[in-house]
Every structure is written in structure tokens, then in C-alpha cells.
Length: 190
Image (cartoon, rainbow, N blue to C red):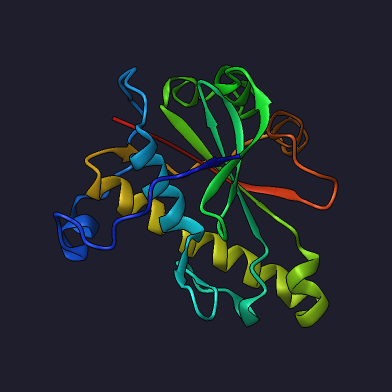
């Protein structure tokens, strides 16, 4: 397990500026993310923002927190542990090209410094809310994704939401457990 640097809670641009500058970016340099940058992006998605109550950066129906976040980098696939603010290795090696193929050949994914993979454990939310829980899960993914996009802008990076992919292939590449389903891919880079 790799403990990430503590996330910053102040930035250099306002939320209004980040909203105004956010665009879908599909062209990236080969420059890697620093640990601080990856820390900030993952914290923006699902990081703990209230230590006392263990509340996270994105709202969750009934605080059921169905999302599981993974980072696919040149070094491998990592699971984000929001409580420890740490990365747990899942697989070694660069799976970005394989992930691009799983996303129906969207080659920019292979060039991104990292792709954030959103997965969900549906039962965490559906056991409380029934079928309607799936809608809540997708809403939460949207909230967390927007946080990543705005954080990327604040870090002077680009990102793009990707929903077109083969679920089984992404599950295999990211090493998702049987109780998780992939929801979203967000490539990020300079």
C-alpha cells in the first residue's frame, strides 16, 4: 500500500474559473502525474472531507458510498482507499493501451497520464433503496466525475468523460471483484 500525499484544500483558481475552463480534452503529453497530482484527483472524487463523520467529497444517497475508484497508470492498476488516502496495487504493468482497446479503440486513453476508473458495488445502495438505488449510484458517479474534471482544470490538466467501453474487458483489465461493475472512465493528463 502506498500512502498518498495529503490533499490540498485551497487552490489557485476559483470554482467559477474551473467551471468556465472545463473542456473535454483528448490529447495528452507523455508527462506522468506526480504523486501530489494523483492524490488531489482521487481525493476530489471520493476523498474523506469530514474526518469525524467520514463524509466524502461527493454526495452519496444515505451515505452508502457504492463507488470504488481505480487509477490506471504506466506503473499498473491501483485501487484507491479513501479512508487511508492510499493506493493499493491491483496489477503491475502498463494497461493503458489495453484499456483504450476495451473502450472501443479510443486511443487517447493509451496516452493519458492516468485513467480513473469508476466502479460500483450496487448492493451497498440497492439494499436500502431497491431498484431506485441504481439511479442514485449513477448520480453519485456524475458528482464524483465532475469533481475530477474541475480538479483537473485547477491542476492545469485536461480530462474527458468516457462511457463507451466493454464492461467485461474493463472489469478484467482493472481487476474488479465480482461484486463490482464498471461505470465510467476518466482519462487525465497534460
